[in-house]
Image (cartoon, rainbow, N blue to C red; front, side, top):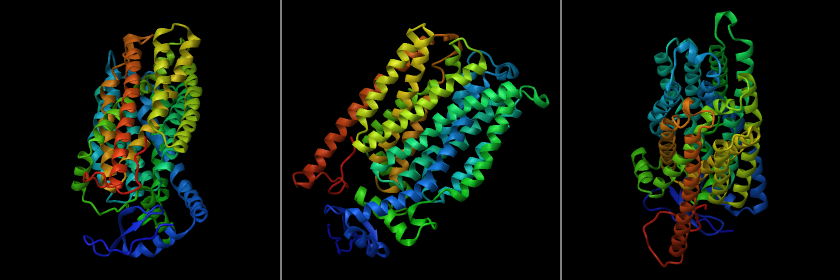
Length: 501
């Protein structure tokens, strides 16, 4: 085992640098944690593996089920417009032409406004309370869509829904990255993001039941009941979330002092730097984020990855081109999303085990590319239904790995990671604003322009993932040369750290 340096960092009194088990310098460690870190560093691998297993069991139970449920409802409340469309939504609100596309895209204008400020604020407040409150807000606004009687009213509520939903997704990713190491994070993000697949799956089931059984109940249209029911469920779960969700390792009272210190030490040992909540100001964190040239490539990767998934907001309409009834169409989406859920778990598990991101993304996007080509080129019902499995299985699964790759690649400090995740998610989701116009109703039933464009987007992501792999290979070579003393480039990464390919 490596020894912990007893040299006090001159620039920060009361803190010390530590050596990891492979003799690598780390960022500063607070004085009150020094004794615990010494003990953890001196333990053998078997002890640490056992303690990690016990800690992760507690964290997983406390964090993952709640985040999955929250994201399921987040995506359900955002995407239920596509199911309501199969009811009398457009007829009741007098919507024509591309009105539905506008109602879909306007949500993301509000979504973009709050991304960055919210994620920076999250580093200064209790995540459990903050995320619980914004969840209650989006549940109320989602339910209020049922009260709209004009297209303008729908647009207003959709804009507000985007604003209050914005803090959740990047906030959840940032919170998970504060508990899990890089090897552990990818598979956990897959479980978290499975909420979108489950939302699409259960959304189809719920919508089929509501539209078929509650249409006209108490004089209320079925699509209005859909918004009311799903919004009320969201508000109920939000009350639980505020009490169940953990905060950061440094201030989680449900763990003992030793467990909190061990949770922090694991991340220090993984990243070779301490994850301090306040060591860097918000402005300094922003500057660190924007000065890293890799951020701009990751922004493009996440933007293109999200663009490749815009078919999700029209998926019931796309499946409807198979010429089944509205209820049958909603039910047909269920097996597609269940298969996507299973594939996502599998590929993110292999990604974490192999320590690979880029090759997984490239292979999955080629699967999505094939699905898009078959969907717009074939007129066979069987072939097109098969293609509708390939599209989300490739694009949605790849996106989960993209999310882990971004969080893994901007390790410390916390504010830089938070800003990087928010910026990538912010600009990435901008693709939904124009991507929602890729599938206008007039292009049905083949949706050739949208399918062809999406196939091109899938190929572009393959190229970008390969380029990012080359960038990280080059950066890792620089780190190796720096450790050998061959170069001095002023970078802050410390000995032993390597970027994930």
